Image (cartoon, rainbow, N blue to C red; front, side, top):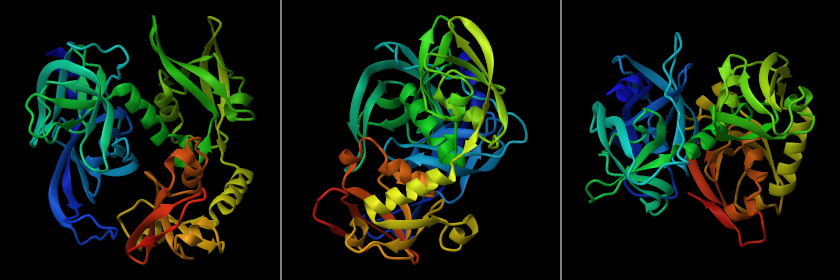
Length: 415
């Protein structure tokens, strides 16, 4: 089948040893049981960025990726969203890697033919076919994890398929395979690709990855020419605003990268240095023109405002840790923020957080940088997330508790 042959080079197998807890507890320890883990991923950027499920790489210290040509390399976890069960890993690349063609999930129909590819039971690049059995399914897989708006299919999806592609008959990615129904036959599920791309754009954003910003907000829509990225808002005084972009513009290309969705914007700008001018091809009122955008670092004023808000809202002062400092403590996490001060009577003081603790996560997000923490506390739905679950390192132990920012009874961090 031509669709499978075209996609095959962009599908990778993921394997390695992961640690799982024998009994769930509030103390997270490295003294856990080791099991063999396996899964699948899809290459979405020629530099080696790969989308997979978070549960495929969670707890894996050495993520091994085998390509279609049987070459095996070691990948690095660069971003994750455990709630949605997505992660982005990166493999080294000497040249440009083949990427998967991204479709859409907004026009899927029950009964439509689909193809699944994955590392089923360790058998790499296993291909199965079927149809879409239903749309918008909700599946509860554990006490703490449920999936919503899933694509249901009867294409065989087995252990090892997680993170792999669900394709339409043209070979376009329409979903990421995520779960099978235990005890059922012929029922598998996939995350719809439009939702996956939206989350991936946030995970790979230059603000999150490199503390830089562009100020473009937009949506992907389908036109006669296929997918196109339409600017819905441009932040005031942002690099995009200064370049002349405005709402309603259609961004066609940034640098050397064609743009069809928000993820393409972030991919195009990853690795670009602040102050460097980048060509942006835009269509406005049926006419195309070239603009030049100069990326900017997150300003010192912005950083100061962020620190003040963290102190005001949480009663916490933190500072980023260098990679070398953090690796002396643990290899379990990607980084953290060292607590330098706690305001007496503040929300964090009520939780038992101490000076020199290291904040490594809040809710479902890691807190490697001030921007990561600011992203959480500035969310419009912050009230719906409370009490916020937090994770801290104290010595070599991971502790967690719940942080009520509104007036709620405090719950102290427990070992």
